[in-house]
Length: 330
Image 1 (cartoon, one colour):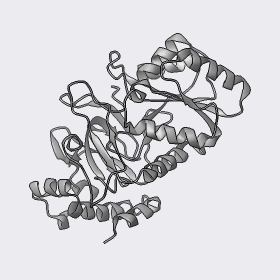
Image 2 (cartoon, helix red, strand yellow):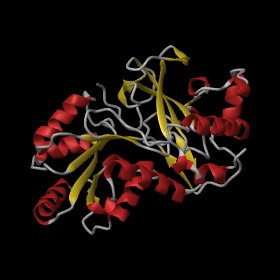
Image 3 (cartoon, helix red, strand yellow):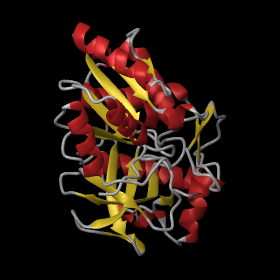
């Protein structure tokens, strides 16, 4: 049986061919060394030797991160990420054993989709995240801004005029592409106030409206942004406090995962019944980077998973708290 360090060192070796092997090995390790996950499995009366497929793995309800410290093994936390939450609701907390490992994972995922961060000026419009502490998204974007090695990269809390001026300067005087990374409500406000030509550059939206207005269908949000900025596609990032990895949608609204992450869909009324590709269900996520917490999480996100492994997010279960990223409804 591997230890925690072995799982970390071998994460980049995960591929489509060996994903099941890695998943079952990590499942058995966490089922024995994560007290919360072990108790969950025991309460379901599941015997470990009967788990032979991804579909057999019990997925820990994501709400457990609100009420328990989800830890595999014995270690001290370097930092605890906290979800954005909504007034009156508990926030999720994810203890991080190794912040450098989180940086390594987020950098590696970014590079698989976009290449070297140093090829971009990264401008971040994330007011709802910057206004609170311990955001995993801000920690990730901080690292990517640092890796961009550009004096022009940075945050624009509520300074839309400054953001407009900076984009105009870079658009006219730089060979690098711009990545404008923003929470949805702030991007919509920026589009309304300062429409401009951003053709050839990239907009990444995440995070929904955060209570700043009615949730809109994704196509409507992307249509507004495409019209305002003269771009063909709006990109999206799917991540959450409870995960170490991210998925990205670059063209058609379907998210793609790094090799060590996979999404399955379950029936809405039966958490132990998976569904056929393309059918609407609730998303289960395998994130093998969640070595120190739990790699098998049952989310409250509604979506569809397709035969090629891509997925889309359609909304949230009716009784779930409004929190986290990608709360838009298709």
